Image (cartoon, rainbow over all chains, first blue to last red; front, side, top):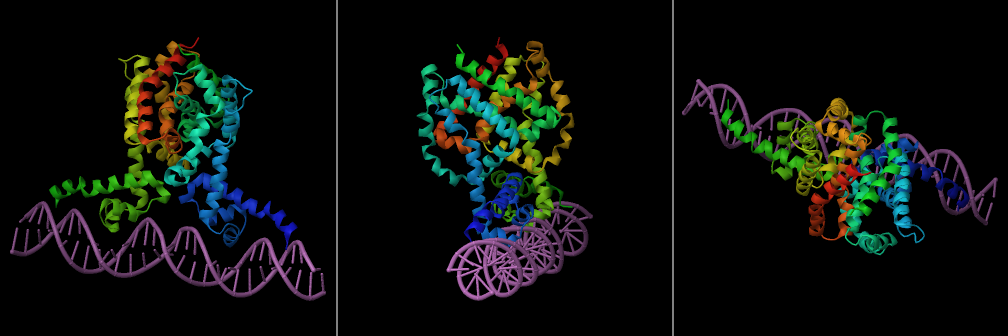
Length: 203
Length: 203
DNA sequence: AAAATATTTAATCATTTGATTAAATATTTT
DNA sequence: AAAATATTTAATCAAATGATTAAATATTTT
């Protein structure tokens, strides 16, 4: 066996294909992505892509799982941190999301639009409801405001953090330059938690 | 000439193709949509689709223009209504959006994801910034709160209204049934304007 | 070094898919 | 009714595209 070599290449060729696939899938979506385009982006042969990943579909599944984790993996640890207050969680989530999305602006639209056209894969999210409702975050929230639905609260938090990136192709030309848009996002790191706190303290 | 006939069929065959195209494009996106699928959905022959619309691309452009108008056309008249207060505008926009999106839940994700993979078409939005900054809405806003950026305010309003639909494929399984989700959206007709007013009255 | 295994490529296949063509049918106009 | 025009279809084309194959090259193991 060519173990050492293989391991090394797992971090070069195979990883390069995944990197390329991530770029092309994210930019074009599954349907508009071309395996030849991915191969070219990775600087390798088309056959090699199939050699490593068997098919476009399989490669996509792998990339998709990673992207979903990247988009929602942020939440779990923060939501269940016993050592932070509700306010600190709002600040942390916002900070994490905006930093991450400034790096990967089209991640949300990619994940959400692919899930829309292939909703089956979501079956495994059965326990998401349970995990959420039993989270420290939700407990803290209903202790503070038993009258506010955690779903609404979470929709608002995610909406204010993710939506500006989801709608960036539309909003950025309105706002102006790329840089102006980035500055708005930077401002939102402080603003979003402040707005969320208003809802929390609403009388 | 077969004028009367033609007019009549403009409202049946041609319109049926557009209806089918709208359904298929919206559900699958341009890349995953098949002209044969659209033809089948419309109950007509593939050649007929090309006879009426020349190509998939042309048909798509027509549908896309209609969908964009549907998604953002709501805003203009309300934002420029001299006879309503800022609060009333928030209520009206929210009411309009939620009603429309309950009918067409995957409209936002479709439009936004297609624009992302084809941002050129957005060049015509040059004046959107001007129209927005000169709107009655923005004037009212800066009169009331010169310290709040209209962009942030609009992002929040749109985010709270559109995001729950953009993220529906992810959030609805968490919330529970389709009906439960619809009820949450109904509640938001009152809640979103209330939250927006909090920002407006923030001290 | 030789054998075994892993990696990479060029060439090719089969299917899908958007589009066209030529002919048939329907409708309108004269 | 006849001619003109519009609508519809079946059959087919050409290009794009995902996938495979067989052979060549590189690497690791013995």
